[in-house]
Structure formats: C-alpha cells, structure tokens
Image (tube, rainbow, N blue to C red; front, side, top):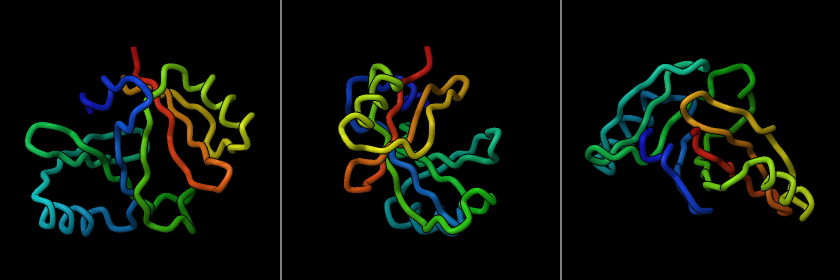
Amino acid sequence: MDDFTKAVGETFVWHELYSPDVSGSKSFYTQLFGWDTSEMETPGGTYTMWKKGETSIGGCMSLQAPEMEGVPPHWTIYIAVDNVDAKVDKAVSMGGSLMVPAMDLPGIGRMALLSDPHGATFWVYTPAG
C-alpha cells in the first residue's frame, strides 16, 4: 500500500472492490487486465491488493463479514485530503452524510466514508505520519 500511504492533495488515490467471492474476483480481474495480486493480513481478515507491475493500484475486500450482510458487490473510491475530520464536517454542512465515522488504521492513515447529497458514497483519507 506504499502508493496509497503517500497520497496527497484532494485527488482520487485508491480504488477498492467489495466482493462476495474474493477468489473469483481475483481470477476475473487478473485475467481481464493482467493485474497481479498480493495479500496482507489486517484486523478484519486478509486484504488483497491489485498490482500493476510493482505498483499497488487498489484493493479487494470480502463481503462475507456479518456487518456486510445485504451490501451488494461494488467498487468504491478514496480521495486524499489534508484533514479527514475537517472534510467530514464540511461535507455534512453542505448536505452530505457521514456513513462510517472517521477511523485510524495504524500505518495506513485516517479515513471516513461520506455520501454526497444524492447518495453517492466515497471515502476521504489522510495518510499516516
């Protein structure tokens, strides 16, 4: 996740697939796009990273956890910001909604899931350090 943890400046920095079948998704996307994968262990289980050459370009998470029941398979995006909490406050003041409160992932950074006034969701993210 080196590229993700160096993200700066209110740009799209990460793409993540939530899948009910990570193995099947890995097979589909690696064959379709020629991507490679690598895995890392997280508190929530194994996390798969999409790689193009040596560059990490996104990730894949399982929808099998109980808290993901009813969530359809989908891709999501992360936007780098200087201050997650300030961006959450601003989004909410503009009619957006906080979907998942800000959280810190050691060695990764701080993030929160927001939705715009129309319901489109996106993560805001500040790298650790």
